[in-house]
Image (cartoon, rainbow over all chains, first blue to last red; front, side, top):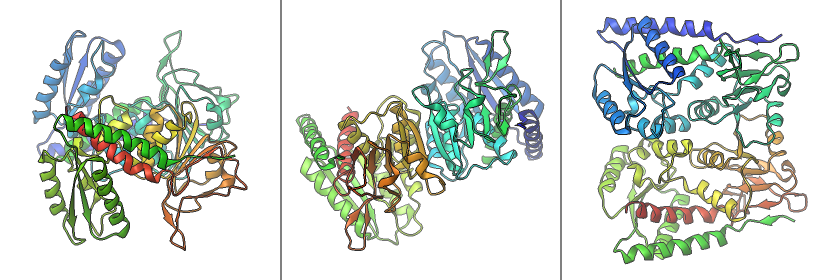
Length: 283
Length: 283
């Protein structure tokens, strides 16, 4: 029988701990501050940003929202980031992806002060993670959420065969670094991979983050494997579905993160946790 | 029959091209400048540093050597790096690894101006490489040399099964990034990997960079595979041997980098090439 990894429950535990940390900071007269920049009017982005604002409010985190029209310039966004880099009330800055038009996400991210880069996307933070350097630095929130889930369910990683499908800067690559730092043997696969199934069939843990439903099916996994589905796709009926075409009847999988209710709830929980941690690091 | 990848010949071609680029810069009144810092008296380090100095001289690159005793402090080394960061005659700075005693290599490397970090070890350069960002930035020289060899011998990488054994900051990790950027399906393995052979037996390309002779043997590869041996170990008779226990009689390997004469000669050639490139980037 497959065990479903419950991201909602784990996210709630994280949020409770985060709230206590915020209260502890409040006793010292300090409030974590998150600035969110949103550009254009992508409905999914609007939804995520609303969820982030609401969650910040619930946990006692100060949050500010900066809106830009889809026709804004990189310079205008960067000017705002420079101000936020200096702003004492803000210790965490986030630019909601994706950006419309010709705006270069990398260029903009690189102007965030690394100590305020709450998404962990700045090259210096990515480099530190990849090098497994000691010290405090932010790490991409979805990969951090996945590691938290695996840890919570005591899925062993050291020496295990782990496969990551998808190599985005937001999920696949930082996850590769985290898994390697946890001493897993990691294979990273992508659109140009020819023989996906020979990898997944032998893997103890498979993490699927392609953004395409049906990337892998139930038959692609070995018995007892742990399958983490990072997909957030909409089917024809506008229902949220993952990247894995999963069939309970056929599956021999040991653990599975469902969509919805698996990885999804973790991302914002980790964002809030990291916003608070970054405030603590300033001590 | 195995084809031996001749690192000496390729390094010579690289050096010829580098020399021409130096001459071209000289016509503009510019000279690339490399500063090498060496700490303590490790015989292998002394040998590498001498080779680097000699090669720089041959190619017309200005070079400066800074010696520190094994009992020096991090602060003293960092003070020198800060001066070199400002020094107009120096566009490339290198700290010879390993450092003796308690000196923290990471801490010291992080003080090199990223644009002068000729070894590509600074976290921001590592992050850019891992993210595959556009633009000019230095990349670790041994991995760059390996990619140059694979390219020269037209070993296909896109969509291929590639295995990297060893996850050092100097070889394994930057190589993983370069191979992923070349669209290979990459598995990174290390001391905690349990079933090494199941990976190597299926791989089109295996790169061995553990620093331990006999990490893998001839029988561990599939027919026609390309094997890159990064090892530089000394056997009982003080002969240089690689990480692969290779037996010509038993092997079905397609390509092999011999030790010596494979990867070894490439590292200094790439260091010189990158020193010159970094001078050109300043235009």
